[in-house]
Image 1 (cartoon, rainbow, N blue to C red):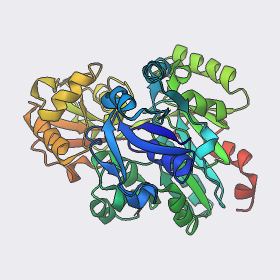
Image 2: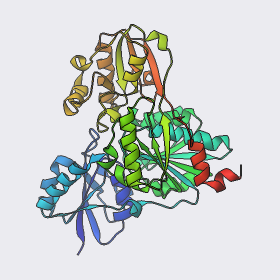
Image 3: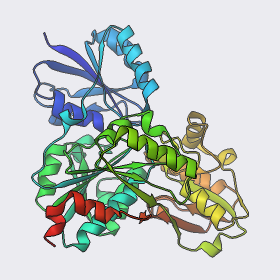
Image 4: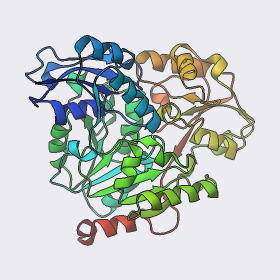
Length: 443
């Protein structure tokens, strides 16, 4: 008998699991996807061009809130959980709901959906959203390029728009962001790498993406999303940990899986974390991944005009996913505001517009900062209106992109960036040399 399946997702891992594990498999028929975590991604269809000939009408995508009713209506046999950065206990709550409705619940093994590349792959992953993957990816690319290695970054999927036009996306110029109608969240991941001169691939079909990336790369760097596992088998698996959230490496899916597979475990942000937090993370690495190389790293803030912050009333904008499902109350922007002695940080919540009000209600842990939510034109407009309504002298934005390219602000702005910095030895370059002697030994 053919098993009827629902894939629980968030517009990324779910599509990859379908493409690699379920598409063309006569044992299964996928009835629906459900969507969570990302605003306004339900109500679409996974198109027939991507779903294959077994699905001439495509596959509908529903809100996760409809899951129980969908199981009953379609007499579903199997539900495949396929998104990331979820507490272990929450995964089991979802499993309990599914099983109570009479369906099986599965987590697909990390290696079942990994593709093999003809080129060496360095994967940069994490145990939580907001650990510092992006700046680490940039550092890895910098190290490789300094040795005349051609490097291409492949980014974890963020297909929040028209899936037909996002099968394979290549980003090498700013014009490409407009061509693919990128959201703020997409630009935050792609723009800093393109600024560095690195070509970035992303999209929906990661087999086709790999084939294209291999044509122009000596080494592929997998730039992970959330705390998800890589889509490609890594020759070196780097995993970031955050001592500001000590213990989370044991508590979130699939972050713990990443740590158990790590070749290099990096305790990041040691310049701002407590000694107790750093030591707990170190102990957990020893327990969970005793063979991993352990590195310490800093994530220093780099401010374009620090003197302009002093004694000013500041509105702080932080990276959206780090604050929302990453569960951080503040980020690098707040660190910079305190370091450079802002007079005060103005609480933006009384001035929030539209969808931003909904975000604060859904994530009450967020501190007196503005999450850079921009998954849709409406959210971008609400972000702009909110920032212009806050009574401040300056907007301090700690997003990875030049925010003023996306929103028009009436207040002066100062940009905060953060980069990877080794803290002692071994350095990241030394660890990579040990793990990839063939790559580093020939240059």
